[in-house]
Length: 146
Image (cartoon, rainbow, N blue to C red; front, side):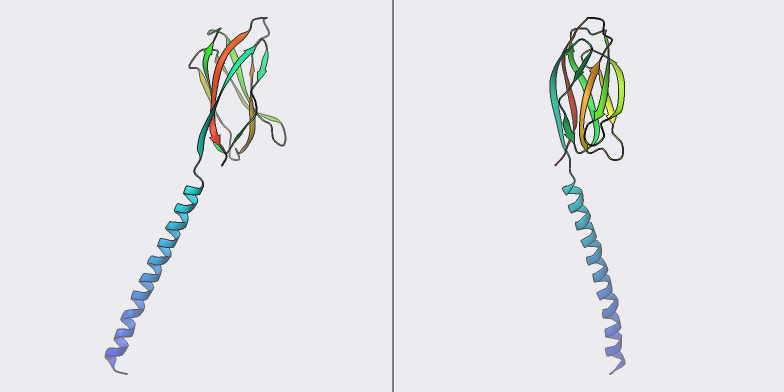
């Protein structure tokens, strides 16, 4: 074997290693892209009509993660205070959080449901039982499960 042949073999080895490294990086990028595209979320919303004197509960809804927003569209008592309570209903039934807002068009509250948010939830609307009815509509928005 001449020195030329040995040098040629040594030159090929780093080239092969470089190509293998590029292929490995490309494979990792493709896998990461596939994972992020598979985890894409779909926004969803529900519009509800409410008419209550003290308490009213929305139908249950399932989320895939992310924040949940509750927004008043219209209300017959725009200066009235209402409590918007978010409750998780799958497994243990517990209150996630609650906020007080005005029953006025455009008023909203956003709930961050934490590190393990996927599950089934409902809103409970409440107010002081003063024999007056709150009547109107609201929309709640969330990330739906796949």
